Amino acid sequence: MPSPFPGMDPYIEACGLWEVFHNNIIAQISIHLADIAPERYVVRTGERSYLVLAESEEKKDHSFLPDVSITTSRGRKRSGEKGTTAVAEPTVEKKPHVLRAFLEEEHRETFVEIYETEPEMRLVTSLEVLSPSNKQPNSEGWELYQRKRQSILLSNVNLVEIDLLRGGQRMPMLDPWPTSPYVLMVARAGKPYACLVWEGYFQEPLPNIPVPLAKPDADLSLPLQPLLDTIYRRFRYEQSLNYTKELAPPLSAEESAWWQERLRGRLGS
Image (tube, rainbow, N blue to C red):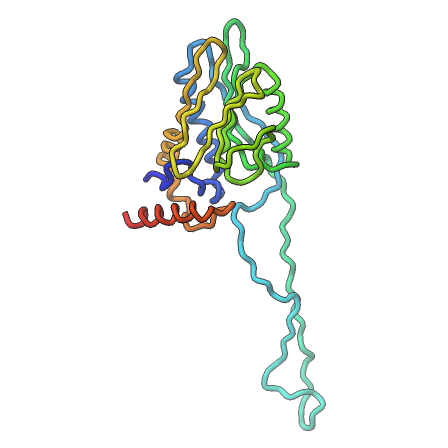
């Protein structure tokens, strides 16, 4: 079954499936580019790793209960009254605190690189699909990616940056980003002040974007939406997504109205 969203499905992010989706989309992109790249190029995937705080993807609601409760026995008279027997003092039941242990787990991120093999092996293009940790300032994932991003933008290497996450903070730029939920950026080698940015939405298919190679070779075309649709169907994402879950960040009134109408049509079909 296809996704109910013509573009990027925001519930992949909301339902805690981003890590597996990230691996899926990187694999699909690398296969597509390897199939269409000229013979003198090779496409490879790389990986970086770092430690992150292990937290549950799902948030639970907790009711507020008093830490101490006092209980008394029913049907017994108080001590000291005539003709009565002594009873035990009221018992005090203390509730334990529930704390999360501090656990770190290794987080791995994959990316795509295109190398020119002639006259010698040289990195030409780096393609990144951003992860939530890349968009969390002051985290190790943010710092590692910022260092790589800056070094590429200052070098003779092309950068393709795909942000399919509604949450988190977008990458630093001198100019404001579009207000669209998603952004797709292509920074050609030697032109960091003329980055091309495409808007992405969940209400409409994502655009095809160019993947630059070394001059004078023509750009490769990356059809993101067909790749996303293939992943959704092949790995049966609809079985793992809860479309009644509240999205964060929340949808606007217009977006929410569009989605509710779309959902009713899907359930009625």
